[in-house]
Length: 133
Image 1 (cartoon, helix red, strand yellow):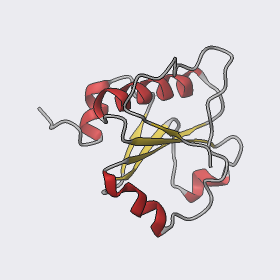
Image 2 (cartoon, rainbow, N blue to C red; image 1 turned 120 degrees about the vertical axis):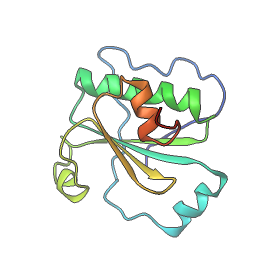
Image 3 (cartoon, one colour; image 1 turned 30 degrees about the vertical axis):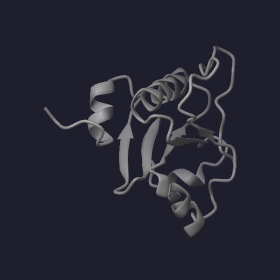
Image 4 (tube, one colour; image 1 turned 135 degrees about the vertical axis):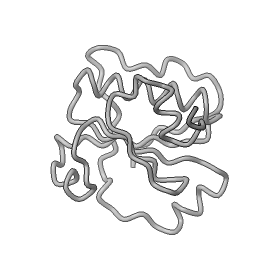
């Protein structure tokens, strides 16, 4: 499974440039196992970003999510990018009604945020990284 994991260190250019492809997770259909849950005992966040192709909104959402993760999660995160164009059935299976959609799988409870994640304050509140003011 192709994932992007935070390292807690500055990584060389994580931006997706125009014409580049988002790194997608091809085999997301499989069920989560207890092993995966155990792997997050260190406080690692599992985030899934559902997109529909390589649209500007998808690229913007990915860039915004990557920045938020680096700034607020201290490198303890995994981002899985799922392209619903490649497997439209996943939209129904995972109850995705709009794209881009971010789902926080871990830590529980599961949270959903729809949009390109450009309003950092709302994303932080939605992910429970910041209290509502």
